Image (cartoon, rainbow, N blue to C red; front, side, top):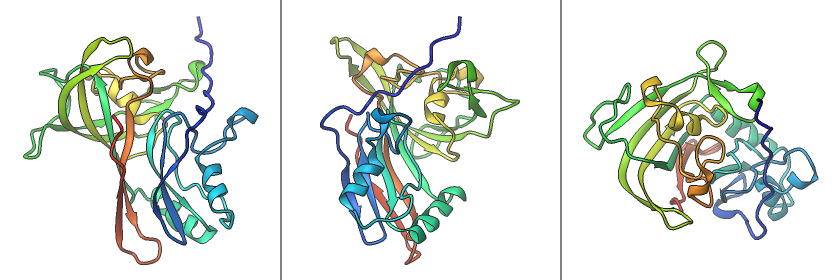
Length: 248
């Protein structure tokens, strides 16, 4: 039986973007979990981070959005305030010269489980995931690993530590805090790479609170946050980097 299509949940009342960096050409904001990055389909999905930026900067022109985060993911997003800056920043995303660092809390512990391509490194246990992804059409918006039809999906990861997580119903479960560095930008890439079985190239540990690939009852939100964002300044040419610590 085909699983019914999942739908976006409207932003929770009271959510808003937080300004991290502001200048004439662009702004960097911290988007909360539960808010869309750009408008979706339907009147109930028009509220989003881009609209909030447009409201704060009514002089801004053009499409503003240079990239986006999943609605369930919180963290840093950069918005251009004019078409020229948008072209310059969007070009960096297209050329993959932008660096992104995410933090996630995974359900369970990596322990001694075999993880393909893992290697020891002076600053901690780390590895590389290379799993091509494409949409799972019968179960949209889910994505799946597909070696034949999938587009390249690559993620570097660094283990930050193991800890305990207390669920909303007061259970205490094992958890792994991990840093994820996507080298490509496929839809749900980090979520799928974490949840995919370790013996098949993933980490085998879904992100806590993942309503699509894990157990949404374990947390009030998806525990995935875009913590750092780095790119070349569109006018000075200097490397700039911004940070918003994970709220979990």
